[in-house]
Amino acid sequence: MAGGLEELSDIEAIVRLKHAYFRLLDTKRFEELGDLLTEDATSAFESGKLSHEGRQAIVAFLGQALGRPDIVTVHHGHHPEIDVTSAGTATGTWYLEDRVIVHDQNFELHGTALYRDEYRKENGRWRISHTGYERIFEEQLRRGNEVVKFTTRFAPDPKEPGD
Amino acid sequence: MAGGLEELSDIEAIVRLKHAYFRLLDTKRFEELGDLLTEDATSAFESGKLSHEGRQAIVAFLGQALGRPDIVTVHHGHHPEIDVTSAGTATGTWYLEDRVIVHDQNFELHGTALYRDEYRKENGRWRISHTGYERIFEEQLRRGNEVVKFTTRFAPDPKEPGD
Amino acid sequence: MAGGLEELSDIEAIVRLKHAYFRLLDTKRFEELGDLLTEDATSAFESGKLSHEGRQAIVAFLGQALGRPDIVTVHHGHHPEIDVTSAGTATGTWYLEDRVIVHDQNFELHGTALYRDEYRKENGRWRISHTGYERIFEEQLRRGNEVVKFTTRFAPDPKEPGD
Image (spheres, rainbow over the protein chains, first blue to last red):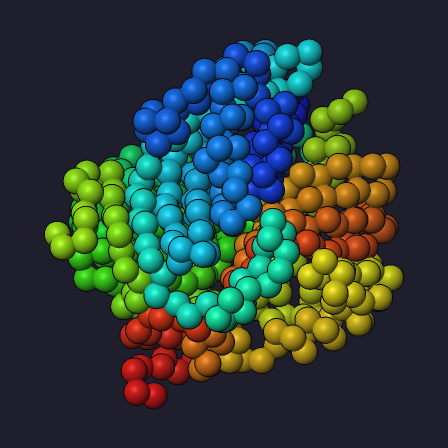
């Protein structure tokens, strides 16, 4: 039955899995994020320009690209459309809005993209077996704002003008 | 029973319907978007200032307003509150954040709004029978950023400074 | 059973409760927002720097901090991760993105944070019994854009340049 209890329960578990992925990504907890991936997970970020094979390769890439404490990232995944394709497999579309802010360089990357993910159930637990996205748009900016205050949990001292 | 299986299944189907609406809107696939509307659907965008009757009129308006390849749109619908009001009807509130970016003119419209939608089940499939929103706020800006790079899937050549 | 009907129904009710909270917060309907809190609710906003005890104290604080009609707020709660911990209690994590815009001062606060909420079921209805968040990052800006138009539902006359 479409929309049966098992399907609804699987969708809730998969949505929540991806929610944890974004939380761990933006708090730079990359090792824990790795536990949300299958060991053989693959990635195809930026329309496949940034592709990786295996949990370890994905975790290493993310840590290298986004781990620096002077970089703030915002990854928000909206509008999940999840299809449970068998008892242990599923696919999902998400609509990403992301920002990468490098305050010291007055730099911001901002854009949107559509994720196409695959999920697999292992020992009763859903994990991401493939993740990738294609951009709708991307802009890279030198920001024209005067920043009065900027604080992050990664660099706890507030920066005042003139710092 | 409130929160019974059928109600939860209907809510999941309606939420997903609206998620597809936003995905097709921002990828400019207006004809496919039309298939998410009932044939007699009505709209009342911008507090009713932009109202239309019938699927065809809504699709034509959206294509005309947002179809140009030099316009990037971002429509994110947050915080659904869905009420199934009978076996085949439902209403929904959503909290929209939208951006319309016209890079060539250094222009951005940005705002938030509350949607009040109506949904109808036809032959087992939910469609949008009415959609409309009232603004919380709207701002129209000439952007003060220096844009280092700007790319979209609609105009694939990246624009570098000086273009 | 994990993911049973009752659990899914509770999660839907709790997610919707928080959705209404954000809608009432940003439309400045603070008294109605209070009805979403238990009478003994506590808050710990801004990593506990802004803490309150009791529904009345929380409602009074929010109205005082955000009630002025010249302030526009945007609070979007993404990525709910809800745990039903007993028949009548639950906890939840949310990923907030918020903006506070004071147009007359060309000021914007923008940031992200992680909510840790607690919920309690009273007479069959879920309410928020504790809410609080810790920042991921926060920036306070004098905006460098030229604002062509700015309208809100709180101050209905559009502001044109030169006003």
